[in-house]
Each structure stands twice: as C-alpha cells, then as structure tokens.
Image 1: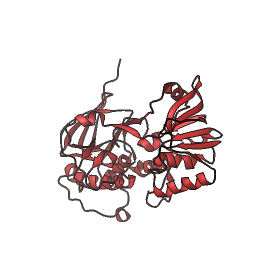
Image 2: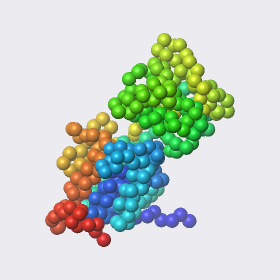
Image 3: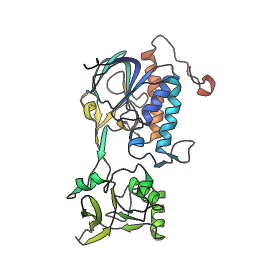
Image 4: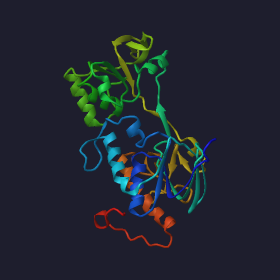
Length: 340
C-alpha cells in the first residue's frame, strides 16, 4: 500500500538548491523566517555539485580560490543552524495561490504550503549541447566522451582532447595538463572566448609545449570499437582532416537550458529567463521572487556573488509577507549573531 502524499508547511518555498538557493535559506533564517528547499537533482549544489565539484571558483569574496564542491559544503554548514528541510529529486509541477497562501505541488505528490516563493532554479533543467557525430552514444556510454569533469584524477595518464573555445574548455585544459598524458584543444578560431587571464595562461602553456592548440579545426568524426575511443578526427574550414590519438573527448559547447514547468506558470519571461524588479527580485506575480541565473533585469550579471546579493534582497522584501505585523529592524550579523 502506497504511503499518503506528504503535506508540508513553511514560510518560504525555495525552488532550486544551488548556491543562490542555499544562501537564500540562510538569509531567510537570519530574518527568522522558515524555508524549505526543493530541487530536481538528488543532491544540493546545482551545477556546482553536478557538473564541476573540483573546479576552482575565483570570484567568491574572501576566497582567492575555492573548489565548487567546497563552496557548497560551506553553504550547507552556514544553514545548518536553521535545520532547513529539503525535498530532493523532486520537480515542482504546479504553483497556485497568492501571497501568504501559496500551494506548491511536486511530481512525487508532495504539497507544500508557503507564504512566499523564491525561484532559484539556475536556468532550469540543463543538459550538454552534444556535437553531431555518428556513433556518439556508444562512446558516451563508456565515458570516452564526457561533458563534465567531476574528478580530475579520472584523467590521469590519459590522452585528452578538448573541444570548445569558452571558459570551460580553457579552464579544464589548464587544470588537466599536469595529470593527463596529453591535452589537445580544438577550436575553430585562434581567439578564445574565455577570461583574458586564463586565455593568456593557455597561450603560455601551448608555447611551453604543455598543451597543443589544434586551430582552426572542428570535430569531424570519432574512431574506435566497442565504445573505446582511439582517434578523434577533426577538419579545418577547407575540409582538410587530421587525426588525433585520444582516450577521452571533452566537448564543451555549453548547456541547453529548459525552464520546464516554470515557463507555464504565467510569469513574465525575457529571453527564457524570469523578469524581476531589480530592487526586490519579485517577478510579475506578487509573492513569487526569482534570484540567480534564472532571473534577469537591466544590468544583470550572471555571477554567483550576484545571486547571493539577490537572495538577501528577496528575503528582506518577503519579510512583510511572512510577518505583516512586525517591523523589520535590520541589524548587521555581527550585532545580532545567528538566531537560535
């Protein structure tokens, strides 16, 4: 006999448990508002946990460099005093109601009653943009073609071919060059779209023979048997081909984003993102707020640190909904400490 669907109540339902969602839970707790985290992934952390836990992040204040997985672990420790419940491996299908009385329904049958909602869903469901190569699924199944790097150690002693010209391609070429047997980077032009400093580091590594830049070429075909990759074939703009010995191909062509059910909730959209009021991060629906990569407004920067700032603004804007009869006298955390 199936267990009855669970019904939960909270002040704020936070949809998305990535960095912005986790920090939103902290900000809500600091203002003595309860929250609950809901995420489609089976673990908190969003892309930081699912795609690149060992990748260093350099623009988190007070951390010259911190691995993405460590950042998530620190955020979890930060919200631990508030004992924030979480529904993981759940997709939010329905949202109804009004400020003070929202009802959120998941695909697993749970019902969450909340006074306000914060959407911190990144850019929705995400998946890699796959190159159009014949036989690709067989190589994906064995790990010969991978779109994310979860453990650098997995590539020790291997011949790695990286395709792409953005930050991910450049960052991982620099990160793997010291443990892989070889690293070759395929790009269709000499100029990379990465941060100038790391692009310069890649040029220096190429000049030192630590990385080979295969330019201007594009992926053309994969060769091997039974899912074991042996050769990556590339072609230049004139159709001239070249064969690269390889054990692993890492194509970094970005992620394909899908807002999923969020797109059908009647919220104002702007280029597949949720339009919000910059001062409060409130969407076009009163009581529903959006922060992090899913939110957009003039001057928006897609940085984790901006998502943190938006989490604080949204929490303060929500306080009158949760505590309509209580004036918010803001105090610095150094003065008030963490509520218990």
